[in-house]
Amino acid sequence: MGFVYHSSLPSTARVFIVVLTLAGATGCETFGARDLGVEPVRIRDVIEAGDAARRASLRLIDEGLVADASGDEPRAQARYERALQVDASNPYAYLAIARHHVEAQDPTRALQFLDRADSLFRMQGEVEPEMEVHLLGLRGGALYDAGDVEEGGDLLDKAREMSPRVWGDGALHPDELR
Image 1 (cartoon, rainbow, N blue to C red):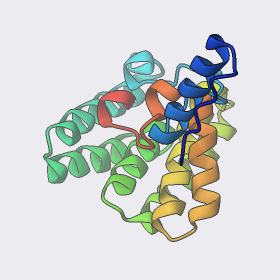
Image 2: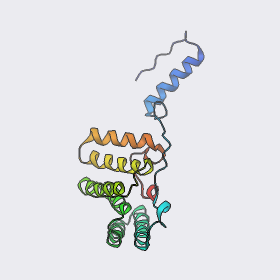
Image 3: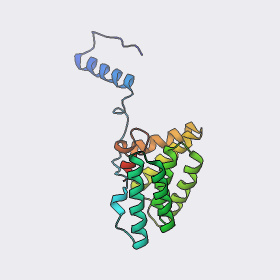
Image 4: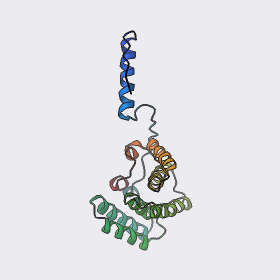
């Protein structure tokens, strides 16, 4: 991209053109991006919700996210699977394991778990924008990894627009779900 300097323009217009040019050249999302201000759901926000089985399952998910963040993938996987055994109707467990599979670039498994999470969240009436942003972003990441770059990219862009602080990098880190 070439920048043409026009000395006949007022100095504020020249500065504006320079800023726009630099922002475009560096991939800055400041211009044109909307921050819809969605603060996505975190496990810590719901860890004490529900009956004893749900609470135990949520604690196991939290342990799995800690293991994932530290790079202990086998322990994380085991914690997520145990969380499903304790409460098979816990959509957060399916969401966490879907995130785990997206991170491992296993889109087929990720989409299976994500479909189950989405279904359970909808049945339980919990699909608010705070949850939808994770569903969109994870589905986008899985579809992108599966080769559907256009749809995956569109979903990731939508998640990024809803919550750029979490989805600005196109991924959901375990600490961002925790």
